[in-house]
Length: 212
Image (cartoon, rainbow, N blue to C red; front, side, top):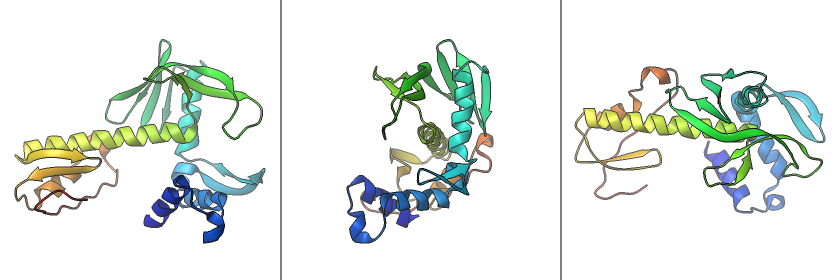
C-alpha cells in the first residue's frame, strides 16, 4: 500500500522514527504482518525481541535452495519455481521456463550483517565478479523481479500482436504512440498460461507528452 511505501522510503532515507512515533522494528513488523504469504505468519513467539514466523515464500525458497546447494537434493521446488544443480552453479527455473543462474554457489561461514558469530551462509559469484550472500528475502526478490520482467515481455509481445506502436517501456509501464482505447490495458493483462492466477491489473491514460 501507499502507507508501507512511504514507510520504506522513509527508512531508506533516514527518517527520524522518534519524531513520527514508532521504531524501525515496528515498521518492519507491520510490513511483515501485512504479508504473511511472503514473510511468514506470526507464531506469537519471539527470539531476542524479534517475532518468530512460520511459512511464507522467504523460508520456502531459502529452504529449497539450501537443500540443492548442500547436496541434499539435486532438484527442489518452491511454489512454482524449481532449483536445479548444474555443475558448480544452481539454476532457479521460473514459472515462464526462463532461469536465473547462481554461479559458483556454495555454503561458507559468514558474520551476519547485524553482527554475532559466523554462521553457514549461501554465497555465490555475482555477475560483477565478487562473492555475495543469498538470504531468504533476496531470493524472493530475485524471483519477483524476474517474473515481473517476464510479464512485461509478454505485454510487449501482445502490443506488437495488436499492432500498437510501442516506443518505450519504463519499469512496469509501456508507452505507445497514438490513440489505442482499451487495447493497451488489455495487452498488459492478457497473461500466458504459466502466469495463471497472478493478480495483474493495468490502467491506461493518454498524454501529449510522457509523465509519471
